Image (cartoon, rainbow, N blue to C red; front, side, top):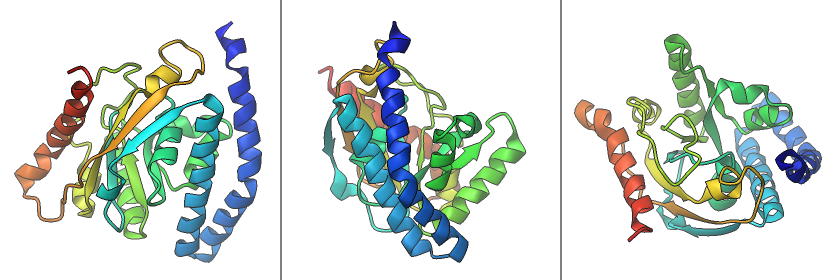
Length: 243
């Protein structure tokens, strides 16, 4: 029954991929000509379409605060990870710049979605392969130097609830090596849109964009503790709702 209940989402997604084709074609042309500015512009247009379309179809109500906390230039967004909905919600809620994701390599194999998430300049990582992880960090730094931003989910997997796992040590090495600001983001309630019931359903989701943390002048010890600092910021925001 749950499979049948989620069939509309598959239809929405196929419709969305069709609507994205012109923008994806433009993105591919910009990549081939090295026009990074136009590529970033069209990626953001595509992300607006992707996020807004799915959020509206699912009946999700977003309450976003802190847009003013996103600085100019490339950043690394760092967020908790509750749901499959985190990616479209991120696109719909964070409007200031184009960004890709640091994602597990298995996502690249999902028909349709894998190619799409690659088009927006995401980095795929093999968590069990140390050398591959280092190569992914270098790839991410290269994208940041071209003006792209990235999103990291340091828990490494979905919590599927309002509980939050520990951030993996070293997960913010990409940001500290690139020397760009880290912007903590708290996602609260994305699991209600799917994981809580196993079917797509309306939900109210709160997205809190916290103040940026500069990394370019951090010492070795501070850089090593950054994941813990960001984890505490996000965890505290999640706990506020229960008071």
